[in-house]
Length: 459
Length: 46
Image 1 (cartoon, one colour):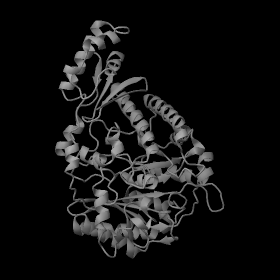
Image 2 (tube, rainbow over the protein chains, first blue to last red; image 1 turned 60 degrees about the horizontal axis):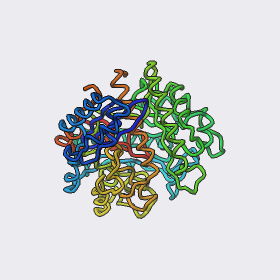
Image 3 (cartoon, rainbow over the protein chains, first blue to last red; image 1 turned 120 degrees about the horizontal axis):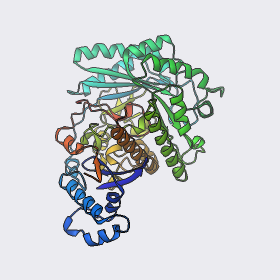
Image 4 (cartoon, rainbow over the protein chains, first blue to last red; image 1 turned 45 degrees about the horizontal axis):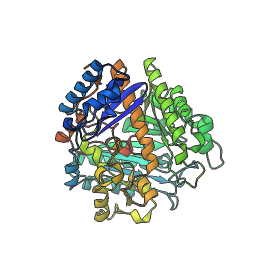
């Protein structure tokens, strides 16, 4: 399967199953419009193709382009066939738990309008995780991680800094237990920043491999949706703290992470605002919300969202050329290495490798499922998981999702977010289509950006 | 080639032979908490 597209003034051809990317000229690009898959030279009507292309290209150009196309096919870099379906069919994955999202505080000092966590309550009641529950969760992951050495612990909320003492206690316990059981714990924390101070900064920098700082963009964008109980905005308080924290980490190993909604469809300006503030690591993602909400993104917003990604991609590369580039999470793709195809087809790991733990110790497939009782998989004190639910997640992959079959982006998103799929289509194997639309656009931008970086030898 | 610049080789096919060690990060942990992007993650073996 191939996917051809134009982005950033380049003609790009992605060979989906080999992962190869080609930048081609117009003659080659136009010729591909007349080639059917599966590729078979015997079935190609060369005369007809040449006749169609002769209006714009010389015979020599057409012949050269044709020969180059056949040569790429013979090298396995174009029109490659799917060789992974068999791997997926014989999928008997015996996964181990390798990551936990610890909901250390089901409470928050903000009341963000779009919060999927129900402003911290997760459709339950406000609650704080005890050190006992947190430590039990660490024991649980050690017991269930098999021979896997690297274990990730993600402190999440609500707002985890509302329970920072317990965060530290759990972290120290995990480090100690890690030494005893030969496990390498890595910690991350997601925060709205209100409670950031020097003590927190020092501890986080010494212990956390990544920190996610929630900020949506300009003051106007941010404060419209990210406000306190008294409706006052958070921007003025958090921005100086975030700048200080990012600099203290040498602008590495963190993300400013925002959400865009129907209120700021012109979100490119918000991403650029983050870059203008000096942040080198940014991520701004589309809100996921029921269509009944006025801030929800809907199908009619697609053209504008695409135009914003185009605009952002252009400015992104312009700044790179000027030596003042920054990273945007969804525009980052590694064409040379990146994750293996097994990882790419198996998805995010929720429900089997990645689990969320509530303040009460209840286990859910991921943070997005927390609060939906149907998805409760166990409790850290019981120490075991609902095996049938675990299998359901374990067996889900790109090939169990009908809608992914013909999608060129499937090895870039790995079939999308199961929670979104369930929330919109009541089936973890039926992806949420609006997210698919946005993902495809971002993948095109990301590949084009990477192509320019490689062609121009930019950082 | 005159009409094509190939940026990378068959990286996916290659990775099928050696991949699947499972030591990599789960994808929701880097920055996204509401979407799923896998291709920008790092392989722990590289």
